Image (cartoon, rainbow, N blue to C red; front, top):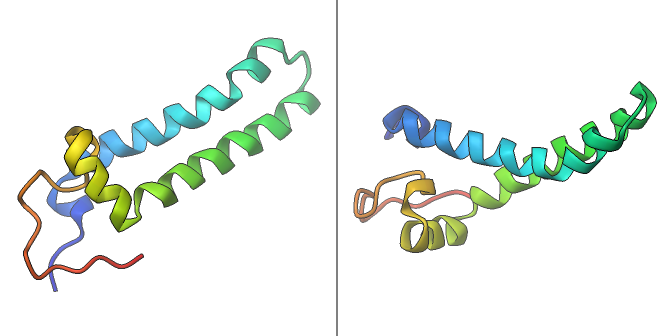
Length: 91
């Protein structure tokens, strides 16, 4: 069994995590700017976490990884051409 891509390519894993977090923060930005109390922030924090989790899940799909390798290679979990020929990814 081969090592997970997070261990093989830790920098790529970090970049993907930062990207996913940034997407979540973009969703929260309007609420952070306009929020005046703790009660108003809580739903937006939950929304940001949900969006971040959703983006992480979508980025783990094999079809999305293939698309990332082709169009945004710096976000792909494995450098272009480095994936084993017989490797199968689990959804």
